[in-house]
Amino acid sequence: MVVRPLQGEFAAEVIGLRLPVDDATFRDVELAWLRHPILVFRDLQMTPQQHIAFTRRFGPLHIMEPLQYNLPGYPEIFVVSNVEEGGKALGMKRAGWGWHTDGEDKAIPNAGSMLYALELPPEGGDTLYADGYAAYEALSADVKDKIRGRRACFSRIKLHHVHYPHLPALTEEDKRKRPDVWHPLERRHPKSGRTALYIGRWACAIEGMPEDEGAQLVRWLQEFSVRPEFVYRHRWRLHDAVLWDNRCAQHCATPFDDAKYRRHMLRTTLEGDAPMMATSPARSLASP
Ligand code: SIN
Image (tube, rainbow, N blue to C red; front, top):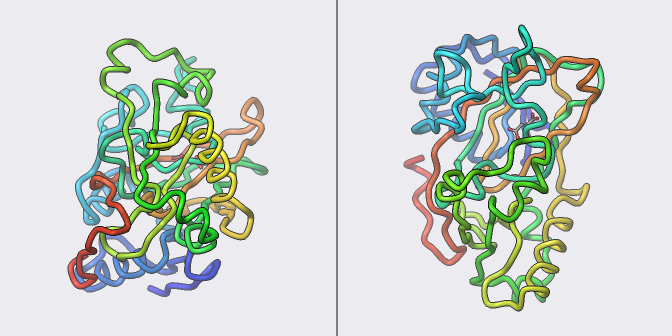
């Protein structure tokens, strides 16, 4: 197995990994992921069982809801796809067309996700990743002072119709399951100990700030965090699997002509921890 940087420390590719991996190789993969929040495994031809088993080694898996978008027989696999068979959608269409981290609108957001490419359009459909560590480091002292110790509100209830106009409205039951949550804007990564700017498209307010001022700062942070200098564009190759770290990186799927071309991807998702303020102590790197 060889790990080669693709863009600074932020993204790297892993060549020659074959599943299943032994413990020593897995430890190298884990350390590589800690160093490179975006890890691209090339030509990782895997079955759904192997995809699940490999991701599960990083931690417990999350089952995405509603269950209708998951692979039949494999609830751990969320299908991101515009493909239909017999008039039935095989997965969620246009998932992730907008900057976010997975589960940012839940009390316990997801630690990581692994997306595997099974069918790709000839153009478009890249995925962009934005480096939350680099964005945090680049913030001016003034802005850091403004956000220090503050949390942002992430609201599925307020923003579902904005981000998913093509999906059914939330039911009262959905709303009960996805109440507004508050997360630190300066997020300490539990394993690397580094601080990332934690923001995404479900953010809408900042605690302790008047509504207008908070909303304006949220918008500014959203735009700042995805400036081109922080972004890696992944141009997919068949059988690439990208493992990303939601604790320090946002991602965004880019459009493609989904009336003309097929894009079919399978995703596993890792459970996470409650986000920590930058002032919280980090766990040792020796025990990932
Ligand atoms: C996602 O947000 O999980 C999907 C990203 C993609 O389809 O590129």
